[in-house]
Length: 181
Image 1: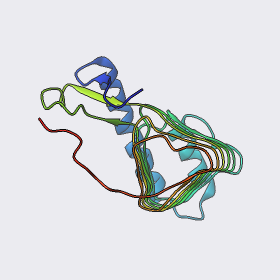
Image 2: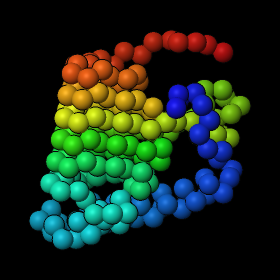
Image 3: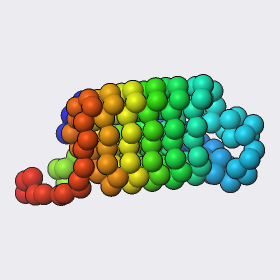
Image 4: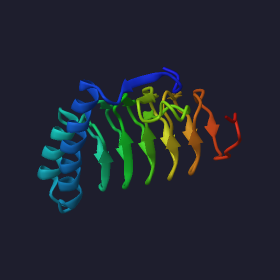
Protein backbone atom coordinates (compact mmCIF):
# COMPACT_ATOMS: atom_id res chain seq x y z
CA UNK A 1 0.00 0.00 0.00
CA UNK A 2 1.55 3.35 -0.97
CA UNK A 3 2.10 5.59 2.04
CA UNK A 4 -0.09 8.30 0.50
CA UNK A 5 -3.20 6.11 0.96
CA UNK A 6 -5.42 6.49 3.97
CA UNK A 7 -4.94 3.63 6.40
CA UNK A 8 -7.16 4.30 9.40
CA UNK A 9 -9.55 7.08 10.41
CA UNK A 10 -8.32 8.57 13.69
CA UNK A 11 -11.80 9.11 15.17
CA UNK A 12 -13.03 5.54 14.73
CA UNK A 13 -13.62 2.41 16.81
CA UNK A 14 -10.66 0.76 15.03
CA UNK A 15 -8.35 3.59 16.10
CA UNK A 16 -9.68 3.46 19.67
CA UNK A 17 -8.94 -0.29 19.84
CA UNK A 18 -5.45 0.28 18.43
CA UNK A 19 -4.85 3.02 21.00
CA UNK A 20 -5.84 0.68 23.85
CA UNK A 21 -3.40 -1.94 22.51
CA UNK A 22 -0.62 0.69 22.31
CA UNK A 23 -1.13 1.54 26.00
CA UNK A 24 -1.07 -2.16 26.94
CA UNK A 25 2.10 -2.85 24.94
CA UNK A 26 3.80 0.27 26.30
CA UNK A 27 3.30 -1.10 29.82
CA UNK A 28 4.66 -4.51 28.74
CA UNK A 29 7.74 -3.09 26.99
CA UNK A 30 8.43 -0.89 30.02
CA UNK A 31 8.47 -4.03 32.19
CA UNK A 32 10.62 -5.85 29.62
CA UNK A 33 13.16 -3.06 29.48
CA UNK A 34 13.43 -3.00 33.29
CA UNK A 35 13.89 -6.78 33.55
CA UNK A 36 17.42 -7.87 34.51
CA UNK A 37 19.35 -8.93 31.43
CA UNK A 38 19.98 -12.45 32.73
CA UNK A 39 16.27 -13.13 33.54
CA UNK A 40 15.49 -15.00 30.32
CA UNK A 41 12.27 -16.60 31.60
CA UNK A 42 10.64 -13.25 32.40
CA UNK A 43 11.82 -11.73 29.11
CA UNK A 44 10.41 -14.67 27.10
CA UNK A 45 7.07 -14.45 28.92
CA UNK A 46 6.85 -10.70 28.25
CA UNK A 47 7.76 -11.14 24.57
CA UNK A 48 4.99 -13.75 24.27
CA UNK A 49 2.49 -11.21 25.65
CA UNK A 50 3.81 -8.41 23.44
CA UNK A 51 3.77 -10.50 20.24
CA UNK A 52 0.72 -12.60 21.10
CA UNK A 53 2.80 -15.78 20.64
CA UNK A 54 6.16 -17.17 21.74
CA UNK A 55 9.35 -16.00 20.04
CA UNK A 56 10.36 -18.27 17.14
CA UNK A 57 13.35 -20.59 17.50
CA UNK A 58 16.74 -18.96 17.93
CA UNK A 59 15.44 -15.38 17.87
CA UNK A 60 17.65 -13.03 19.86
CA UNK A 61 16.42 -9.60 20.95
CA UNK A 62 18.60 -7.38 23.12
CA UNK A 63 16.60 -4.88 25.18
CA UNK A 64 15.77 -2.11 25.35
CA UNK A 65 13.13 -2.99 22.78
CA UNK A 66 10.17 -0.87 21.70
CA UNK A 67 7.01 -1.63 19.75
CA UNK A 68 3.69 0.15 19.64
CA UNK A 69 1.43 -2.82 18.82
CA UNK A 70 3.36 -6.10 18.78
CA UNK A 71 0.64 -8.29 17.30
CA UNK A 72 1.56 -7.25 13.75
CA UNK A 73 5.28 -8.02 14.17
CA UNK A 74 6.17 -11.31 12.44
CA UNK A 75 9.67 -12.62 13.20
CA UNK A 76 11.27 -15.51 11.34
CA UNK A 77 13.75 -17.95 12.85
CA UNK A 78 17.33 -16.92 13.64
CA UNK A 79 16.42 -13.20 13.67
CA UNK A 80 18.80 -10.99 15.65
CA UNK A 81 17.64 -7.58 16.91
CA UNK A 82 20.21 -5.45 18.69
CA UNK A 83 19.42 -2.99 21.46
CA UNK A 84 17.30 0.14 21.29
CA UNK A 85 15.27 -0.74 18.19
CA UNK A 86 11.74 0.55 17.57
CA UNK A 87 8.99 -1.28 15.67
CA UNK A 88 5.90 0.79 14.91
CA UNK A 89 4.10 -2.26 13.55
CA UNK A 90 0.39 -1.35 13.36
CA UNK A 91 0.33 -1.92 9.57
CA UNK A 92 2.54 -5.03 9.84
CA UNK A 93 6.25 -5.82 9.83
CA UNK A 94 7.74 -9.12 8.68
CA UNK A 95 11.39 -10.00 9.28
CA UNK A 96 12.35 -13.14 7.36
CA UNK A 97 14.62 -15.91 8.61
CA UNK A 98 18.19 -14.86 9.39
CA UNK A 99 17.58 -11.09 9.40
CA UNK A 100 20.08 -9.09 11.48
CA UNK A 101 19.09 -5.67 12.82
CA UNK A 102 21.70 -3.29 14.24
CA UNK A 103 21.19 -1.01 17.24
CA UNK A 104 18.82 1.98 17.08
CA UNK A 105 17.05 0.81 13.90
CA UNK A 106 13.51 2.18 13.48
CA UNK A 107 10.71 0.55 11.48
CA UNK A 108 7.68 2.81 10.90
CA UNK A 109 4.54 1.47 9.21
CA UNK A 110 2.21 4.43 9.77
CA UNK A 111 2.29 8.18 9.37
CA UNK A 112 -0.07 11.01 8.54
CA UNK A 113 -1.22 12.51 5.23
CA UNK A 114 0.82 15.36 3.78
CA UNK A 115 -2.33 17.47 3.37
CA UNK A 116 -2.55 19.66 6.50
CA UNK A 117 -6.35 19.37 6.56
CA UNK A 118 -6.20 15.57 6.80
CA UNK A 119 -3.28 15.10 9.22
CA UNK A 120 -5.40 14.86 12.34
CA UNK A 121 -8.11 12.81 10.64
CA UNK A 122 -6.23 9.86 9.15
CA UNK A 123 -3.25 7.58 9.53
CA UNK A 124 -1.50 6.54 6.35
CA UNK A 125 0.81 3.62 5.96
CA UNK A 126 1.69 0.22 4.69
CA UNK A 127 3.42 -2.96 5.81
CA UNK A 128 7.17 -3.46 5.82
CA UNK A 129 8.50 -6.73 4.44
CA UNK A 130 12.14 -7.72 5.02
CA UNK A 131 13.15 -10.89 3.18
CA UNK A 132 15.53 -13.56 4.40
CA UNK A 133 19.16 -12.94 5.32
CA UNK A 134 18.97 -9.12 5.25
CA UNK A 135 21.37 -7.04 7.35
CA UNK A 136 20.17 -3.62 8.53
CA UNK A 137 22.93 -1.38 9.94
CA UNK A 138 22.84 0.78 13.05
CA UNK A 139 20.52 3.76 13.09
CA UNK A 140 18.74 2.95 9.81
CA UNK A 141 15.10 3.98 9.38
CA UNK A 142 12.70 1.84 7.33
CA UNK A 143 9.56 3.71 6.23
CA UNK A 144 5.99 2.51 5.49
CA UNK A 145 5.27 0.23 2.57
CA UNK A 146 8.90 -0.77 1.93
CA UNK A 147 10.04 -4.24 0.87
CA UNK A 148 13.69 -5.23 1.27
CA UNK A 149 14.88 -8.11 -0.93
CA UNK A 150 16.72 -11.23 0.14
CA UNK A 151 20.42 -10.86 1.07
CA UNK A 152 20.29 -7.03 0.84
CA UNK A 153 22.28 -4.75 3.15
CA UNK A 154 20.95 -1.43 4.45
CA UNK A 155 23.91 0.72 5.53
CA UNK A 156 24.08 2.36 8.93
CA UNK A 157 22.08 5.57 9.07
CA UNK A 158 20.23 4.95 5.80
CA UNK A 159 16.65 6.12 5.40
CA UNK A 160 14.79 3.58 3.29
CA UNK A 161 11.72 5.07 1.60
CA UNK A 162 11.63 2.85 -1.51
CA UNK A 163 11.89 -0.88 -2.13
CA UNK A 164 15.37 -2.40 -1.97
CA UNK A 165 16.27 -5.03 -4.59
CA UNK A 166 17.62 -8.41 -3.49
CA UNK A 167 21.39 -8.76 -3.03
CA UNK A 168 22.07 -5.01 -3.06
CA UNK A 169 23.56 -2.37 -0.76
CA UNK A 170 21.63 0.84 -0.06
CA UNK A 171 23.07 3.91 1.66
CA UNK A 172 22.20 7.52 2.35
CA UNK A 173 19.84 9.83 4.10
CA UNK A 174 19.46 12.80 1.77
CA UNK A 175 16.24 14.77 2.09
CA UNK A 176 15.01 16.74 -0.90
CA UNK A 177 12.00 18.92 -1.64
CA UNK A 178 9.45 16.78 -3.49
CA UNK A 179 6.59 19.27 -3.65
CA UNK A 180 5.22 22.38 -2.01
CA UNK A 181 1.76 23.59 -1.10
